[in-house]
Length: 298
Image 1: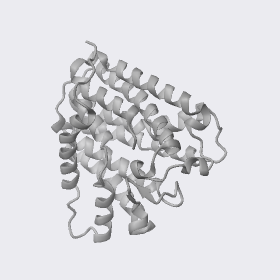
Image 2: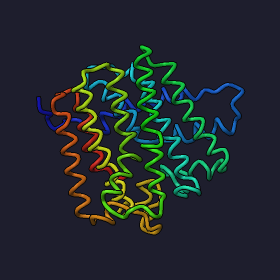
Image 3: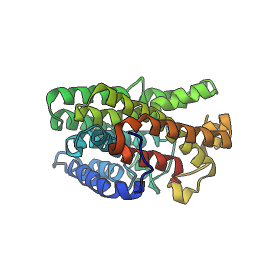
C-alpha cells in the first residue's frame, strides 16, 4: 500500500515521542557517588542537550513501522543516541574538527576541558553497550543489537569515515565523499532503523525496506548538512557555518555545486520514501521525518 502525504508534520509527530526519549535518557544519567561530578555533568550536558533526536526517533518509528512497539525499542534508541553524542563530543575536539559551538551552546570541551570531554565520550560509548546488553530482551535480540551497533560505530563505519574525512591525502571526488559519509553519517542513521527492526523481530523483507530507506536518508542528510554550512544562518543552525570551505574540507556543494546538491538530496528523499511504501500507513512517521530532513534549516 502506497503512503499518502502525511497530514501531520514531523514536529507534531515527534514532539511527544521526543519527551519520552528525553525522559528515558535522563533516567540513564543518574550516576552513583563513584562517578566524579565533573564527568557526570559533562555527560548530561552533551547527551541531554536540546536536539532533534533523529536517531532514536528512527529506532522507535522503525520498530513501529514493522509491527513492533516503541517501549521494547527504547533502550536501543537511547543507546544509539549515546553513541551519537559521544561521536559529537570527540568530533568537536581541537584534534578533530575543532568546533566551539554545538546545538547553539559551547561544545563540551569548551565548558569542561578536553580531558573531561574525552572521558565523557568514552563513558557514553561504554554506557550504550551496557544498556543494550542489560535492558534489551530476549538475549538473542540484545546480542544482535550489540553487534550491529558496534559495527556501525567502529573502524569500518563511523570511526573509519571520520578518519578518512580528516585525511588530507584522500581523493577529492564525489565517490570518496559518498564513501566517507555512508560510514560517518549514514551508518548511524541506518543502524538506528536496524535496531528498531531487530527489537520488533520482524520479517527480513521489512528489515530490508528499512535498510534501504536508511541508506538513502543518510546520504540526503549529509548533503543537506553541507548545504547548510554553505548557506545556513549560524544562529538557526546552532553551530558555525562556512567552516568547511575555510578549512578546504571536501563537501557535496564543493563537488557538485549547490543546485545539483539540492537536486540529488531531493532525489534521495524520494527514493527513501519509495523504499518504505510497502510498509503502508505504519511508516508515515518515517515519511514525515524524511521530508523534514530535506526541508530542515538546522
